[in-house]
Length: 425
Image 1: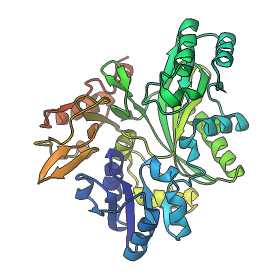
Image 2: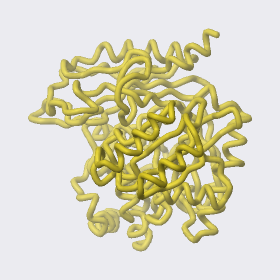
Image 3: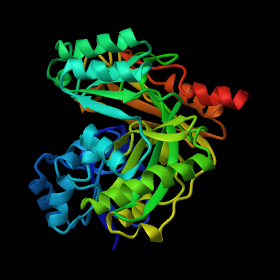
Image 4: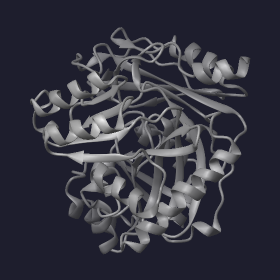
């Protein structure tokens, strides 16, 4: 008897997880809720209200599902894993208490301070005068953040003192509404960013691969920040030495600290890092796979994903290992014109290239309307390829992307440029 598994989510990350889980010889049935048309090719879609955790547990009990893999962060922060565990169902994903690592910037910064985890020095302020005095003491460059959610607009990387003081005033003068009622002032970290992924079972850690994503909407890293316009793996900046340091200085103290504080972390830790002259420093944690980083990780993972995730969920991570293809993987996001601002919904996607040995299209924001595939999201498709070098993976990904017939789509044309420049050097 194989395992019956339920995957929660509907984006490109979940399509990549579903595609990889479906290849497992240990799997009997894969359900997904709510899923998308791409996920429907490798799983049975279920119309469940994923905000109703009791309904999710009831579905599992009624259908013999013994393992739930949670893709997005919102259900985790809302406590889905706690309710399923209480119903005796194994879950891949942290408790609500442990998910605060993503749900609260202050929680993570305080954990770093308590357990001596390298991160940018910071202070939190609720009035302008105190914030400005601190800024004047620290000098520029410095980072000013509205504490709340400000649709990606609340962060100022100030290169001069004047710019920093003006940014503080903007926050407290209401430029970002309620989000600016509290301001976080952080040290400026200079270096190269990388995403590092590690599975945890509460006590043990299994490092996965590294990736680098491209946040800004335009070529040459210009324009507003997005959820990510593309990614590649591995990240050349994450040398074996840097991986070892990241585990020792950042990941392991986090796992020990979370356990000591009474909320052991189980799931995937996604560390956003800045590799500085001093070494790796933590920018932020996420408590789920990155999107679109997950897509390139799954293309490179040689091992069966199902037993690895199940080992993390059941405290047996020390009994499994993960092997990776030496090849590079690269994914390009096709987004709806206008993203990350307003965009037209339900535009028709007339044709997609067939998957082959090199390339694969993951669905991120699609739906079927009267038999026609349409774009429903901002980020819609993840055109992904694997090849011996980043340059070859980039070429293959764009060749596949150019066969997509969707008038309302756009993409960056330079995903992977940093790594390709390194390969040529």
